[in-house]
Image (tube, rainbow, N blue to C red; front, side, top):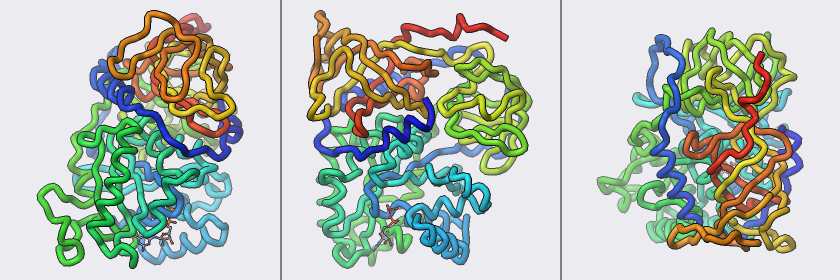
Length: 492
Ligand code: GDP
């Protein structure tokens, strides 16, 4: 596990067809709704701002307008003024990172930038009367898919940015286009809602044409269904102009877009604000997978709380090393808070541990109920698309497993059953192999112990992708942990 694995796995993914994965996705969703808290959590202290925190990841093909849209959100919600924005854009350009200028808004501190932290996923915040949002600007370039995974695995809502401009829409889907892979990964990594923004509606090749908008939506729909999205429940389409900020904070005026004025036609922020609150399981044992760590007058970790409640001053255990730590402070959007809840991205200062002893993928856990440390587990996997020269998935197959912030070498020990995609029934016989499009249950070994959960217990720590030579070949969920060494580990 660790960043070196991410780098190794950052080759260009291919982008041919994906198998029908709706069954798995539905199963994933149903189970997550059914999951029950396992144990009583830590007590909560007072906190004044209790607005729900929602994480949005902006995904899509390079040049679709992700950064422009993120920047527009910041500008129009008053997080940054126009002059500073131009300054950041200029600076980012000078460093040949124009599409990451959002990251420059976030980390105005030169030293932080020099550390290269924001190269991973740009982060920014905005808020409305009812909710607080973090936006994660995932790099769209094909070489950065592992970084996109890091962004998407923290996200509740995916914003798929699609360019309606003539020629650009088409490119996003062709071989090598990122739209498909991003949408698929986002689904697997736990994005509940996908807002598909058809961008550049103001462009001279589009001019708010209803026909072009429908064409984009109609072409996207079957492919989103293939990725496992339930179009009625999980996907919302809307036309926007990120550059001009139209249909972002307020609905597009009738003189600009007369055909988008129905009762259900809403602007971007209305769509986000109207979502029902997510179940964050505040009483479940804490699970905070670590995305990043650094030294800043002490040891600081960053990550998103997946379940439970984090309390300043309380003791926790860092898995898999089982190091006992005390939380010195918890920062949310740069402000110290006494408690933080599921869904919140936090920076946590830890006592009793050195930064060198922490790796991304470690999980800060409840002391009484630590995250399991696992070398072997059984999972259900949908084989999306195998490599041409490795077209059979069987015992002995090796790949890289991505699960929350983990990227770890893994190998298939045995296939335990094939699942009939139509009926969901398991085969009685153990299959010798499956090909692209197949669904199997199998036993998987990872090279080094990782902290995961079964999907039923904590969906975010129980879903994963398998990647091989930079391509997503399978997506899965953990059914059973076969080797959990957490309980046997020496307690200090
Ligand atoms: P990213 O790679 O997805 O982050 O895309 P960028 O935000 O860097 O945008 C790519 C290009 O598309 C830039 O030249 C933008 O100015 C342009 N662009 C983005 N949004 C719009 C829009 O709403 N309308 C028009 N006409 N151009 C846009």
